[in-house]
Length: 534
Image (cartoon, rainbow, N blue to C red):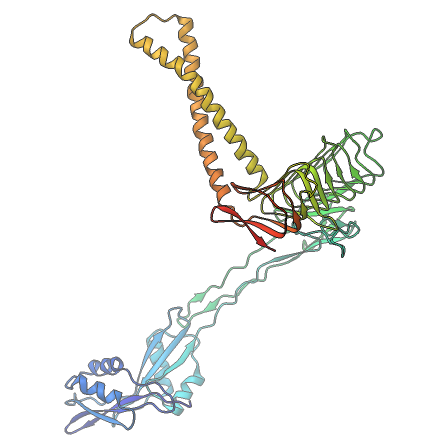
């Protein structure tokens, strides 16, 4: 060891016992008074001035001497103290020198000393020999070390298809969606591997210096979970698709839905389409028809005044023109070239090239990108973000309302509750006079016919039910109101221009655009909408 801690030893003589104190060398640690005091008190020496001891310990150079009392009749042999770490994995030994006529410890004596402290495992012979060779005192030696446990390795499932429902479609250099290379739907072929299970690796228990077992972190096991159209390998570590279709991961369970394909238009020749899996339509969806799928819907053509409903994503490669009647609903994302005169609702995000005179809402965000990327007319609602090149028109025309800051479904419920609370208050105020009048007649002890009594009982029942509904509606309304106020991160971003005639609402605060602005974002700050540069 390069450095050497400070240490002390006793010298026994005819005149009494003297404590020799040696300062540290080469950056070693100095002695602490507490350690010296404990040693002396255990051996019955206390006839000294503690101030003198502190001064001796503070000396920087040369040995110091301090008379500590008369000899107790015993020579002090070399000794050691044993301390075990809190986790019982390390035994620290600290040695003290013998007095001038004391005996030194042997390897056997050190081992016996450890065993007397019940330290029996992981004894490090090389460290014992190291001490016996260099005999550095007041220095910690790790003379026993437990064997740490080997933690188990958790099982892992590797998936070979897209499991990210929020993955955005690929874009062309001009910002338009590349419908030839969509990466949002996981197309799989028959026989394709879908997932591979990498089994858990069991851990190994360790052992502490007392010989006790030490358990490591328990590994977590997994198993492949899957639905129909999937085959499990013999060793139960791989799954394969039995059909060509679309794969999805729902709550750690793999599903493969085979695809129902319509080779042309959905029209009089096909009728309405309803399918438990995914639907691919090579043509258009004509006015008046509907397509319902529990999986994804992919349409190569245009959606007219039709109804679409999907449990997965909806992709319309040429656009949606609802002609004021069409409605498109997806529990996931909607990607389309344009949206015109339609109602479009997505649980996830919406990606499109333009929105014209439509009611469009998304649980996450709405991005209107591409060459033009404009929004004009209608109501646009998104949970977190509306982003477009242009909002409104320099020529004026239809009003455009853009709302962000809460899930559109929550906003709709908030507005319906607002109307319902007002209606209930009105109905309750209309019923109250009849009940008050009835109460006054009872107080005057007037005769009341059975028919009238039955009628009043019905009014009282209705009054009570409406009061209960009003209380519940007010509570829910207040909760949603607080939720609207807490939507601080929502914003509207305009990469080009926004024009007068556009209203922006963030949570519960609104702003009407009075003059044209460019390259701006609108955010809520301290209870009001502020405009900042992009």
